[in-house]
Each structure stands twice: as C-alpha cells, then as structure tokens.
Image 1 (cartoon, rainbow, N blue to C red):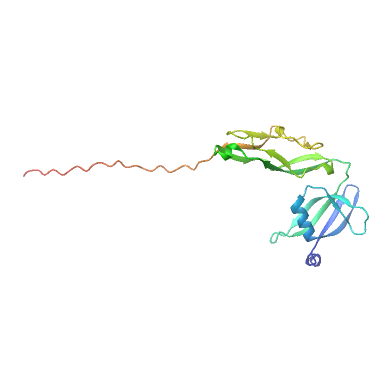
Image 2: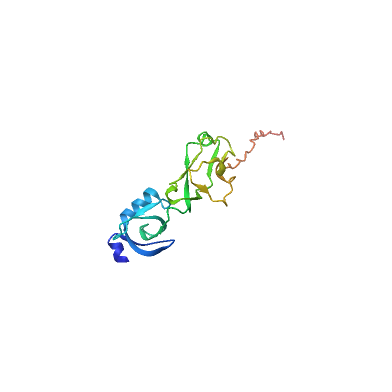
Length: 194
C-alpha cells in the first residue's frame, strides 16, 4: 500500500447492497479535487478499469493522514439509483442578518448538517438557509421554515420545531468597577496660641 501511495494512488474498496466488494486504486490528486469540489455526500460516477459502465457511488469513508491530511484509504458505496438513501447534507447560511449587521445580537448557527432521505440522484449539495429575516434577539429559523428540494425529505425522527439558526443576546464583557475614592479636602492646620 505504501508503494501505491508513492505512485500517487489511494487504495480503496467499492461495496454496496448486492454488490461484490472490489479493490480499487484512485489517483490521489483527482480524489482530493473531487472531495474539495463536491464533498462526500454527492453522487459520483466511478469508472473502474476493465468495466464498460460507470458505477454510481458515494464516498462512504475517507481516511486521512493526521499529519499531512493526505488521503490514505477511501470506501465507495455503490448505490441503487431506484432506492432511497439517508445522507447528511451540509447546512449553509445565505444572506445577512440585520441583527448582526447592526450589533443587536449574535448569530448562533446551531445545526450544521441535516439527515435527509432521497433517491441518490436527488441528493442536494447543500441546504441553504436564508438569515436575512433575523432582525431581533430570539428571531430564529426552524426546520419547518426551510424549503427542501423536490424529492428530499427530512429524517422522520427530526423535530420540525428544531432551531437551525437564531439570534442571541450580544455578550458584553463586564468591566471591573473602578473604586472611586472621594477626595476630601485637606483641613488646614490651625495654629493654636500657647
């Protein structure tokens, strides 16, 4: 495996429902570029040497070297295009909150990804949440407020009242009270006759 990595290849495996696992080697640069551009929840078409048809796959696991962040192994999950999948999709904030712009409060991004169910070719690259309506403290965007793409459903276990983003009271650093000493005028010395 170290020899493969020296040649710029990342070892991997392709597996799936009713699919016999096969070992693959992926060019490291192409893999890094693909992960950077589309992430790990996007449907990919994998061309395996010696096969005529491409395989529809998702990157199920990507192992990275902790020192260099280079890929050392990749697992591809081959999907059936007619069966729904459950995947995590990143939540991305869009727009500008008036509350933040005018220092009314701080933006709290509570949920960073959502679990959705859909057919493999309908997996959204991201879920966009518009924050331009958040103008006051305690304004929030809940799951029930967002519109999902056609064919995409939230996991049934997720509460639609769950908050994705909200405006919280701005935290102000408390200043140490400065002790004020009242300046008392000095009393003049009075000379007493002896």
